Length: 343
Ligand code: VNL
Ligand code: MN
Image 1: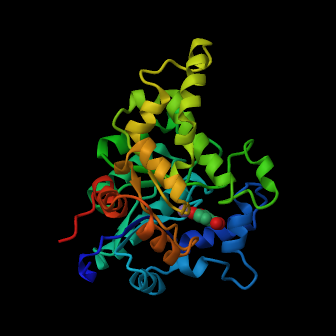
Image 2 (image 1 turned 30 degrees about the horizontal axis):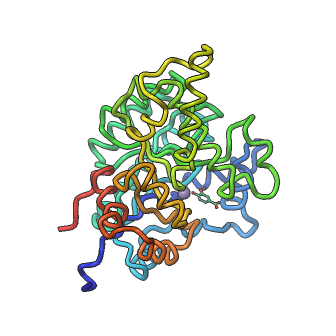
């Protein structure tokens, strides 16, 4: 294949931050919080010499990052404000910083419209102001969707107070990416040892729980066109669908779960898409394609937490059809995030 005819590569869960958010997270690191995000926040934003692991890479958008993309043939990154985003802050600070992060994101995209797309942040702490920012982010800034870093003060999006946010995402036709953060209070205790608080294990359980709560609460009966994206190979929710269906029916009959119009698995297939971020496993990819269809799987690196070269080498060589590879490498991202196809 000629070099210029190679498959376009769009990476869909790529992390960045801005100095103002990093500074506030340094304050969080020095506060008396016992959040399970603390080890990560301390490690990145309050390291002894100032620059913790990943901080430089998260702050950089146009230097090392673009070189890393060029070196590895990554055409585009879909950027999102890295976890925990603005969700540990008070409502006013969070609202202000989400707006600032979205402005910066839109600026960098406008300088590199073929290299970057972006998911907008918002502050769930103030649902009303979140909705206004979501509308601005899509209509004015032309961003490509939304990111939420899972729970906010240990509350999940099945709580009706957040329905305005879900209603806005649905009305704007913009996909909401639920990215992990340290697990909610009450869920995180066993993750406090062996480094389980983050990407090794706790992150996946946190987001899987979030997604399942939304499904069994009936969120997708209320918002049938809402699109949710889960990273890390769907946080393994699709492996669980048969058992969730079976046991949710029993819970409905027992009166402890609301009646749903569809089976949980049907919402997962209708309302969710997944990405491969940080899960470079052929077996998991083949299972995901079989379970959900290749049109519901997108490629991601998880830069800078995950190195780029192996993520590209893995997807290039994955034992799937070339048609599926086209979908996963770029066509699904173009459809889901409204990214213009290559000219
Ligand atoms: C890590 C991995 C952190 C992926 C992330 O967000 C992430 C980590 C804070 O390994 O610490 O998206
Ligand atoms: Mn990530």
